[in-house]
Figure 1 (tube, helix red, strand yellow):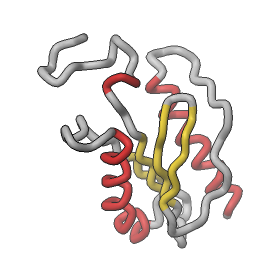
Figure 2 (figure 1 turned 180 degrees about the horizontal axis):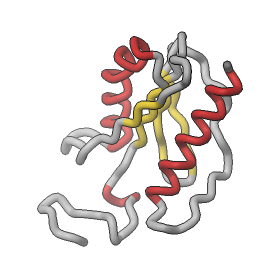
Figure 3 (figure 1 turned 135 degrees about the vertical axis):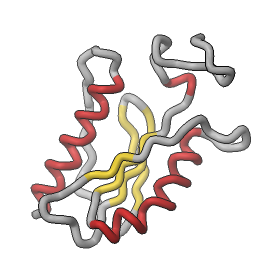
Length: 123
């Protein structure tokens, strides 16, 4: 079961990174290690930080929940906003037995063709 969860984590991350790479091949330098069930962990890849929550009793078959935050509040960073979402969605993910993935997106980290400034126009 641990191998299946690890595979699901890796596959989920690869799919997200591929989608975010603006049709460029996603290169993942290092995949996350097997995580401690019941804990939110902060991880980092070449696209930036993300938070993962692994349930103590995974669903069978394993399922993933990906939560993508909106524009961070003016007094919070993208990482702080992502952590807020991870902390608030973790109880639901635990109840369902789902892996929770919450990437942190900042305006500066997005590809210029995908980036919007706060007034909604393209930069």
